[in-house]
Image 1 (cartoon, rainbow, N blue to C red):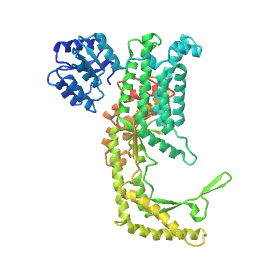
Image 2 (image 1 turned 90 degrees about the vertical axis):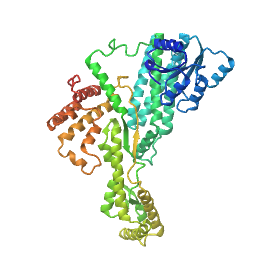
Image 3 (image 1 turned 30 degrees about the horizontal axis):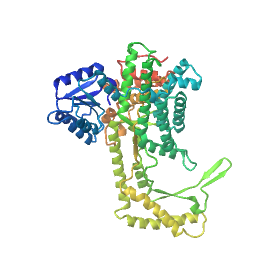
Length: 580
């Protein structure tokens, strides 16, 4: 769906005069982009090329392909099936109207065109505010709460600001895996909407809360560590982010709907009416708008990234319970807890260490991403290929080492391991003062564990899995919540810092000695803001820039002001300011 000021509208009409009149009406009622086709076949050719308008006004009787046949094709195409089509025709024959109605058009408008009928159809497509759906009648709310009109207005304003703030905070809270924070924010918005009779806001928040409570906010059991709980939440978030963002966007849209209602009825002032009339007047305000737009575009060209801790391949060192040797796994004496554990290494130490290094991708994720609030990391889309390529290279190297150590016959290797496991277990029995030898059941249990670890690794599943999640931070200027600027500030800061450290650190080039990509490609990929420094880099300017970034970070100004200062540093044409 296009924005209200730029709906894409298609007129399919063989009569030139009718097309002209309809175009003039559409252009008079809004700044819409109007396209024309003089018959159904030309319209179908255009739609088949991949273009999808917001609304189509369709004549019934046309040469080559009439309106009914065109709409049948549209409804049969999965990509076009949801297209909103309105018949505009002089045809009044009942049987043709019945045929047209069976294809479920939005409406059937009889010629000559009525400006009011066309306007109503466009407003329906735009989703004109429905007071009954959005808000309980004001008089009923005031009587129920015992408040007057002015108090109702103030509370409604506060509710809209609360929802704007909530939709802004939710992506940040999700990035932090802050279950309590998410539930608290949703409950506050839900309670306020319920009290004030904001029906649709209440339903949308309640749907989000239930989905999160049911799948994402599970209480952590005592058997699950915080790290494992975060890993589970991270996996759920990577699967559910699109659904969550849809709910957040619907909430944002509902706030705008209520604001439109308020403007029409005089219930609310125009959004931002307390600001400067006529838009952004000062250079500072104009530059802020440019910075916000740049941040929004950059966030859209990247994703959250993390190395999965629950889906990673299992270590090739086999843990053995202390109870196997008659020892407690944990002994507590006062405030001191002693934990005992054993592990069995099935490869020689050097090979095991080298293979284990190939399994890791956490260092790659850190190197090819930038930090955000709460420990989250953001990777530009251009770096995803670098990450996947490097991870694949590590995986191949680890498999080569593993296959070289094991040989071609895994059954023979496991047979050899069986005798070694028995020898090592008997040795541990002896050193632990346990009489007798290891039982056959103990040996076979450990051997099964070895095989469960080896076979997936040999099949190519060696390197840890990487998870990607897309989250939209929304319009940063919608609320006065400075906390929303923490992640943008970190992104700006570390993007600028990386470019300068590459020239200030003499050892930086060593990083790429065994990498699948070189320094130049890395720096170009990570320069997500088009940093002015990268056009003419040198060591002296790099050192000075790092000092400036440190000074901005340490300054006692707001996160927004820090963003402004860093933006002025990486874009020297921007207005400059000093920390307060």
